Image (cartoon, rainbow, N blue to C red; front, side, top):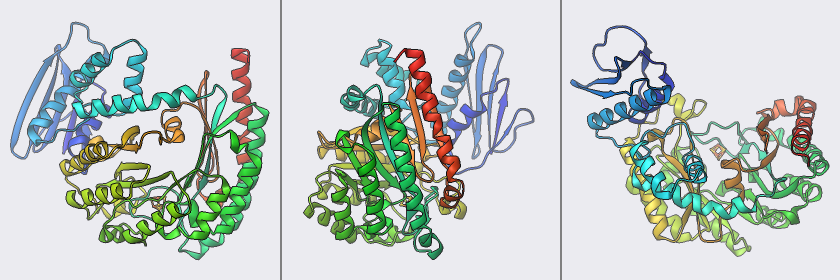
Length: 487
Ligand code: SF4
């Protein structure tokens, strides 16, 4: 299909709207030429915005007047709203977030409240200007409310520590991370050297944090799957963290034990001894056929066994991830997975909307056509059922290229929200990242500064001195902060 952009330069915004309705189609964008066949024409001129959509033999045109001297914002929003309405009419699809694309909805809503608008006013703006449906407005308001205690507890020089373990037993078909499959010997053989370098970076980073007077508030070990390495390797890493960082100051310490096939008694003992207070055991789905199709080597029964074992060993804060929209799954299958997760009664359930990015096998195979309406119903059902089951949303984020622009939401039982997820997603405090693919995000009154570690373990070893050198930017950042604000 061809999209014409006439008299304006809002390609990015128009593209975002078009993708809501046609997530798997390819479009060409032209600024001139004669429309024919299926096409979308967007135009600004003669004091109005005009859109024509010609699709499967149907054609509709809409016009909206612009003010006498419209700014870019007015032109863009008028055109986007008009296009959105026409596409809703013609496709019968009603994307729940309306035209809120490319921004973090909770951040947008919170900033409006901080500027003095009431909840009702913001609700009206979300519904009228941004065309979001009421359910998403409620979701944003509830999420914002749930985050307040965490926002209050963020210390001015507080920080979180993120440790990256970029290994997994196998690679999931939807994965676009750098994770290395330990099923391959060459990857397994690199793990001891990876751990050795990681331990050095842990001590180095702890020293920088101490020198700059930073105060540890949370620790999160993710990846990858941290439990994909051997218990001895994991212990060498957790021992270093324990020795280098003042763990007793932290509000929480999470270790992802994502894959059920990596959760053994010995592994859980290492985690217990590490001081971690929270783990993740992620089913993604409870359908064995879907698990197989996405390249995971465990069954749903193994997930339940891992969960019960963790409970027996005293883990009282467990998160479970589910994914809506997996290939081979359908609405009923997703609902059954949701019910099985609820029956297990974990403290947190996180529901992801599947995003297929370049680099994922699913993308390469072109294996992923799911009806966006079904996808939207899955996410909606998760919200309704989890609310009924006593969970509430406490963080949400959206990723580019998710069909329907749908959200990932962390739900928690009362008193069980995860501090790290909120501060990281909402960029409320500094995160010091260690390991391959980790990002250090420095948050201060001067703004945000990011330091990227090399992505792949091989590069991480071979250019390790560069990584340590880049960490000096932390000193510079906090030096500048102190100068500017007289700390
Ligand atoms: S568990 Fe996560 S990081 Fe590992 S392969 Fe699957 S999607 Fe990628």
